Length: 582
Image 1 (cartoon, rainbow, N blue to C red):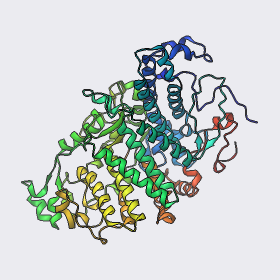
Image 2 (image 1 turned 45 degrees about the vertical axis):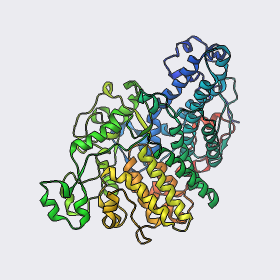
Image 3 (image 1 turned 30 degrees about the vertical axis):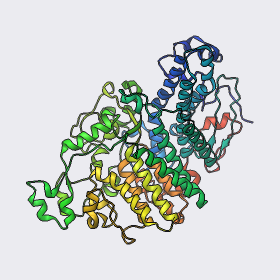
Image 4 (image 1 turned 30 degrees about the horizontal axis):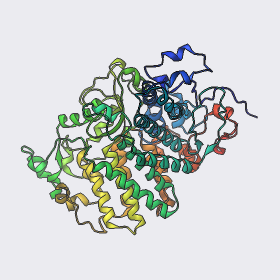
């Protein structure tokens, strides 16, 4: 029989939710196994501090979430190899339960912080007469959204996990908990978020003056984005077509609620079309089609401005939710992994970005330096191994590498571009369920076009000859009269998946996109896994392609093993068969 120690590693949860906030001095004065709840939850200030602690705990684990959601995908490579043995093991296909990146304690820490607030916030109502029921429910709504977000990571990384909705407060609590199924948890999360949505306590905004308060706290718009993402996953993983249809429709509706709210806008890139730009007759002379003369010419400053708004300054018009870094200590772990004075432990897989996602244009004007997709530069600094989306704090033309004390960057979670692509994916699947419905396909393409147009995407990555045939209407914001020869669901599915890669590279989404596609139950279900398997050549360490590819053929090995210590300590948690007996 397993030995159940007093402190379960996935919890590490002796303190309350304020343990990472600025109000934790009291915690040091009490013995470890007797944290006095009755002495703490006395006022709104205590509940507010607990909520601050939830956001702080989520920020402190940003490095873990990012690496776990990218390490098996195809955009990360090893930097200073001696420093990342655990990462190297993942890239070699040698995934074991003791690996540092197979641990889930960060997620359960934040979850328990949320559960603590939900279990004890009402106590403050009894003693603080100025604390209103409405404000208490606002804090509780935020905690429920943040808890759902953490579980959404867990079920995509480990699949079936312990689902805990009550707080572990003392080391006297029985922490044995069996895992619940992935889809059961997903449905429970959706049900809870729909309840938060209908109850109406979660604000759409918190301040008319301070943008950071609206971007850095859970709002109804963050809930919409998270819930849409969950419905997208439910549609992909479900086998019943009625369930798929309902899930994808809900995803589209939620995406439209964000898009049509008027509260968000894609950060623009200043550009001009070639035909309207003087001094480039040599480019126009090479133009092969009418569309060539309508492609964009950019400037370095226009690219820098967009990059700075999104990834340096933060809280842009495009941002829906991002964790606020108010000091370099909050994100120093990210600096250590991805900057490290210009010698990062983890860096960019440039071969995949160049060969697969940002290929050379098919047109002669591609020789002009500013004819390219701006996201090619977002992914990395061209003359440096540093991933500039994560590491950059200056313009993209600079080789300056920030020191850790200068590194203060928010952590992006959802932005409007994600929503357009999420909507496109759901619409395409709905079109498939409705006999290749051309209206839905057209709307899906237009949603992708919004993102590509901002990015100045090149012809080489477009869908067939759509841009050349219909450029004037697209450029005017009109939906062309597409025919069945222009759009089909299978091609569109691949197109959207590639566009998601280009747009979200190095934002912690790629593995989930690959996994969702591999497990999607649609007309191409039998071959969906092939896309994932083909990426193994970019995902694997040198010489380990066959090992990684073989692992992925086993559906269980597309998910992480349960952490070794938790298997040892939790009587109801057995290691997955694919990873052996512990």
